Image (tube, rainbow, N blue to C red; front, side, top):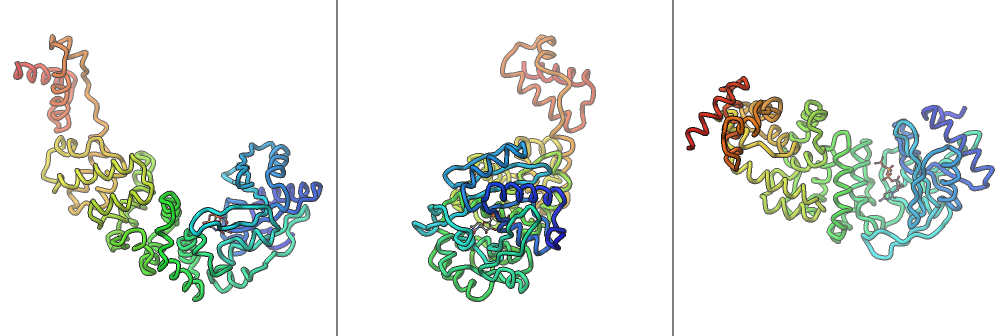
Length: 418
Ligand code: CTP
């Protein structure tokens, strides 16, 4: 067995051999390319297998899917297909293609090409490596642009000078890979990156593409690292002139790890939005809206920003408040906002109160319902809601425990109102 193969999990090895057989009988050369080859050489695990086919990638994927009895999802306009395999493994198959950037910062037009074309269109040398797939295993690496040497030296290098202009998302990708592997963006690449910033290429990206890059950054195992670097390079300013990566954002990112460990399973917050809130915490509310608008934030996320503005304007030190008052402040807020409030609470007491709300108060349900109020002879109407609300407040403050006590309280409350 060849050494590179040894680094792959057995199921992947078996799968690639089957693909190798298939490739040979079909006489369609295929290659493992991109991130998986890079990570294989670095000894890092990667579950996304990208395969380039010199020929009709879609037909290849369909036949392979049939053989492996796996569903195939095709994207005809890009000449790509995806096969979902066991254990989270994903196989993306593409027709070798040449890309033509019709306008800067816009997704390119594509046409069929050779493996060389396909590798040359890529972002960095370390992502331009390929391995030919054979039934007998891998042959040597196809390294047309010096990717292996750059991997060894730990350098991020573009393949052509206009790379960042054609695709400014590569600015984020360069920083992401640099900080993930402890690499360095080499000097010429860095000068081109800065040139793209000066030419305001980030501003030309669509909001959706900017959002996608932020999501990928937040998914890094230690997202503070790329954000520090993006800040130092002056990239964040191009998302919003007053956006920076503050000390409180760094602390927030660290705390996100802890709150996700503690609350992730029960509250199921969206980690992206939680980290985003930490990132933008120093911006004014107006700046937050402006930035969020330029990042294709959803309506729901925009509403949550509004909720945050309201709750932050109202709550001071929660420690002074009764549980029912804490409940009134926090009820109805999303899990991301609640967790963000625990992350940024200034007093330990306030943090404890929010945690108590999360653990107990938010789950409290009354033992009585409207039907019980009816049996008490209270006429149906909007009053029910008011009375039940008062019962809930007393329950939360620990004044009522049993159903009888709730009923009694409801009756007295009604009598008071008559
Ligand atoms: N690619 C590119 N330019 C981009 C995005 C992707 O050239 N803007 C190429 C790179 O060759 C990359 C491959 O497409 O290796 C696959 O892209 P993707 O899956 O996004 O990246 P990975 O390199 O696998 O990185 P990660 O480990 O972060 O997923």
